[in-house]
Length: 266
Image (tube, rainbow, N blue to C red; front, side):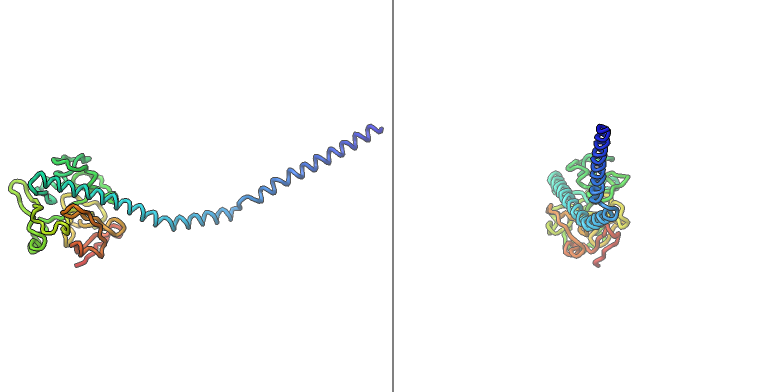
């Protein structure tokens, strides 16, 4: 009888210990769950992240476009060097935008185009592509690349400008329209090449690119890099201008590729 009482007593004590442990183990998860984020707290965190991202995104886009603008400047310096090398090889002559109906300056200076043929190969085709410009499905020597000032057409419309800039646009018998660098009065202030686009936002082409005073067939100088555009001058240097500096660069208009509007300084 005493042994039975001891067994009952021992069972009672053991049950109390188990119950105490169970209470302890049940209390731990409840304490842990209290430290987890609630749905509202998660939504608040997500909202804060979204706000920070919206604040940082414009700055990141500006930084990316600045990097593209620097890359474009490097490309244009290569194009300026190509014109210089061509002039050295051909007694100071360089091609105008389109010396003949079948040939552009690009055919004479660029190499390795995705389609078409070249005669010169002074710099890679990619050098004529602006990293910020839209690509074109007809990506070849005629489309989708930056280009020159069309001086032959410009001087035909404004012959008086020959007195200001120099009478350097000539017709070479059997070869077409060329520019003679020796007759450029101010090489460091006279534009040779630059960012070009269409007023509808599509790529320009090598055949017709820009004049100083108006677009050509809806194509012209483009403000493509955060409201700025790059220009290569006859002396080989590259400059960046915004709409306020257009007259100083000798231009009276520009195409804003962001808003697809024509900026007219006339």
